[in-house]
Amino acid sequence: MSDKTHLIGLMSGTSLDGIDAALVCFDASHPAGCLIETQYDAYPPELSQRILALQDTGDDEIHRTAVLANELADLYAASVNKLIAKSHIHPTAIACHGQTIRHRPDASYTIQLVNAARLTEKTLTTVIADFRSRDIAAGGQGAPLVPAFHAAAFRRPDLHRVIVNIGGIANISDLPVEGKITGFDCGPGIGLLDTWCLTHTGEPYDKDGAWAAQGEALPKLLTKLLSHPYFKLPPPKSAGREQFNNQWLNSLLTGNESPVDVQATLVQFTADSIAQAINTLCTPNVDELYLCGGGVHNQALTSALKIALPKLNIQRTDVIGIHADWLEAHAFAWLGWQTLQNLPGNLTEVTGAEHPCILGAIYPA
Image (cartoon, rainbow, N blue to C red; front, side, top):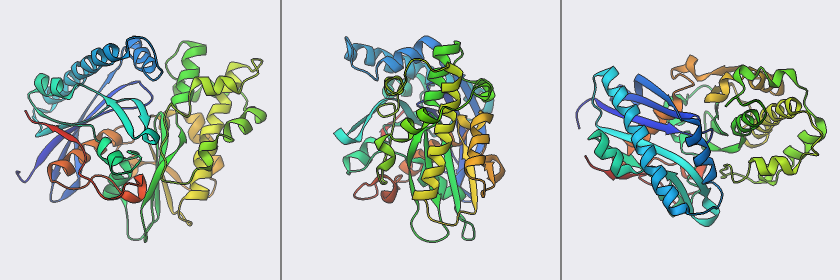
């Protein structure tokens, strides 16, 4: 391997909005990687709906899954090729998270959909995919994987930092000065917010949280939401649409609620669940809290989080070196780099795996 290694990290998350592609350079002076160039491509709305439909049982699932894996590979390849054209750099490898359609560590499996062989063929580049399955095979949750990267990029010997990634699901990385690094999915991020917004406004997301800001949180509904049994589980734990979905939300509604008030309640629910997790499950005496992921753009949510955690100075990860929008794609580039170096990518104290594992399946060009 040369002194400089370039990888492209591909991330498409639970929010089902699209593809984040990040070109990252790794060398001895940048072991966590240096972000070189980025590319974002939105999913067509009908594609998002077909992905969502595969998260429930239905007719002809095997065929629909295979067709969708091919389509995703083509979309990922298009994003990669745009990024290569912009940067004039051909990467050593592509680290592709794939699109989660089922996450069932309780049943010892997780599915992140992509036809990795097709992606290799379309880009003529080595692809590393299926990062979560090895951790699950070793008894882990398979998620979250980003705390290992957060530790590599952001841990300090003099400051206790917590990183909160607010995607479709929210996850926390606790980076104390001493002791073990911990991390876990703490509950919903913007997944429920986006789905409720689409259903009631026709917009795929609540831009800046402006719609939610027009409503008022409903105390009784908030109490019901926060009573979900997931919040009582100790780490290691991971979550997805299996726990937090429209069916569950609708089961808690009377039908008389104003949609905008439900949106405002979901904002408060997300902020409160994150704050409670930090207060109860993270090491005491946090010095700094940093946010990343799509949720940082929801001003109603970030404002609610600041109120819920008044003693903490809350900022985006931009101020410590990695743009909040690109951190997860960057993280998967790093995980791919770990794979190429035959180094573990999981943290056993985070996922609960029995031992550190080299993650990912490699499809050579």
